[in-house]
Length: 397
Image 1: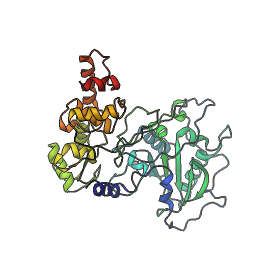
Image 2: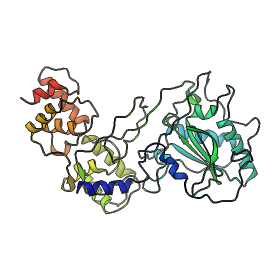
Image 3: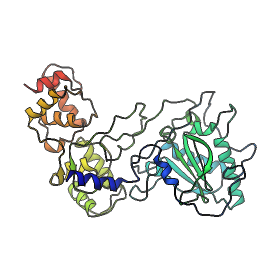
Image 4: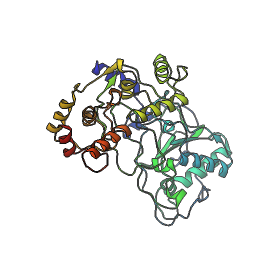
């Protein structure tokens, strides 16, 4: 049952939770369209002095490194501030083309930063001379060397990962224009994808300062999405994802998903039943996850279903008693736990603290953290949500 559920989950998330430079898989199908690129390999001719966007801050000489690739791992309901800011500034500065959208349904298509609010499409028809000139100005300014002679100067300052136009792609992690052979030749629009720093607007273009790298959102349990983005940047790498101590036979779903399983979730959540995981359902899911010590993915993932609908639960870890859970932890070297720790040890401490069944999720959320603090306080320890060897030993008594 667990193996079969894992296979179903992988099928549901195929093309969505791919990590690393596998985005190149998006470029393998044959492009269509007849518009030719510029003779020098750029998508359109670039002017000698391209007209760019007006400066939004005093940049100084410090500049970001070229952005690395950060794939879409979570689902957003709206464009992030830096994405929206870039859209508005481009449209007002060039007065050409129109907004092709920043956000996409998470339930359709493959992996895309659009689904995370980190990409924008600027509709410019390459067969229209005025649109083509605007594209040449913007792209020439974006990827050019700037006043300091550094490749992709404005792409660095904006946190641009890659741009696509007229069957050509420029990426910060592999600079230089090369052929783009995706199924959509992008002759109708420029696609811009941003890093997390760029999408949040935490770059020198907007602030005048070079910020630490933003690692974005984290996946806590394997085969699930990352948690939804918060306003604050994450400046430390994410922990390695672990296997969820509890799974479910229910299908996966997130924003835009439809079906009977969504109706069942809406029934269990006590909200209007539409069969579509819409914005209101997502908000209710986020609230449920917050209150039941689950990663706030806003999705109907395995850990969430296991808590929401226990009858469908699968469990790859033992069904411990309290003493068995503590004995396992002591034998395993007394694993150290903090807020947002995830995995088998987190499940063990939830059992040892005798938390309600629906809170035994394997994730140290706010309610588990409060229980740890209460237990520590009752034994004269500092009031903080940390479990170390001393706490495990006290739990064994």
